[in-house]
Image (cartoon, rainbow, N blue to C red; front, side, top):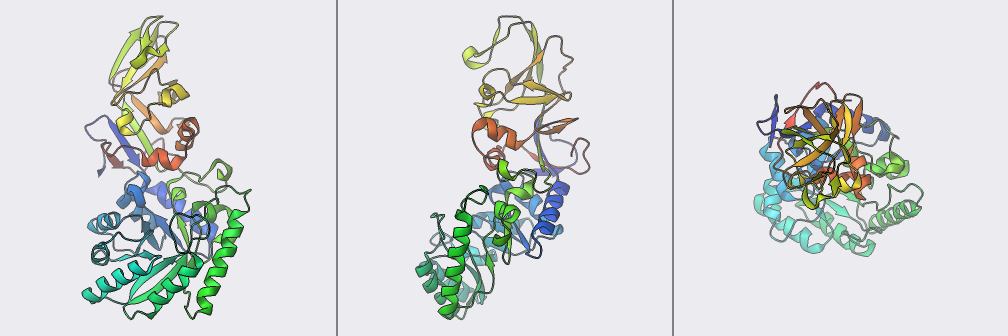
Length: 385
């Protein structure tokens, strides 16, 4: 759900800043030039709202978009977005007709999918259709082995209703700059492309770089980069933080719904794990783990921002609410803004901070934000970096 203007009636929402997305795309494009950039908007734009991010990225010069599911591409088309869209994995059995109807460029790494896409394209009378061949160079998730890649590439090149649009691979440890495996994957990829060429299959375009590859591995940029997490202003890993000027594109915001004084010795929330040692002001905030605020954040020491101050989550996060220890006689009132992710005044809580507390990555933090939280598109909002 997205909207513009004032926050929605529910006092919990996610603000998405298209200007931050545009800034990140512009910075990344300059960093990887002359390679063009495609923006990855799968998982509802990593929790930001796919259509909003797609429009901002395209306006900032992204040449195309990438998704994980045909359904995600259909949502972009329904939103009026007609830019090129690449599917990052093979469509499921029976999904080729929908793929063609949505004008999606599939990835293939098996003869079966090449045949299914060819049949759908021929039936629709819409060839030659672009197909992207994925080679597995060591990620071992999906993709053709170099030997199979030659057969798949030959099948695409030989069909009159298909054309080979690109050959690509995915990097497993590009976010670990000390690892030499990225260089090994690129070597394997070069060899696979050479085998295709030797078999008479023209390789029109090659790409390997994800966000980490785009930022930290110039040799991986090749003919295109596929930027995902960096488009949203989040570094792919702590080792890559600060290498380019990224701006977070999201704030998770709520408002204080109740204020009370808890006397010294009192315990707060399920399990009574948070006990106060002095009289303190406790604020209740209507957001919880159903919205993506992980239950373990409180025990990990997570803080929120109220009045520009960092304050601890007090007690176990519940499904729909958290409680915050604001301190003795704190000037906190019902309706005060609470920032869980993002900037307020001079303070900021980032997805990377949550990720560090939870032992995960920033990707999981934003992708895990619940869909029942409205996404509100903002522009020139005070407090944005």
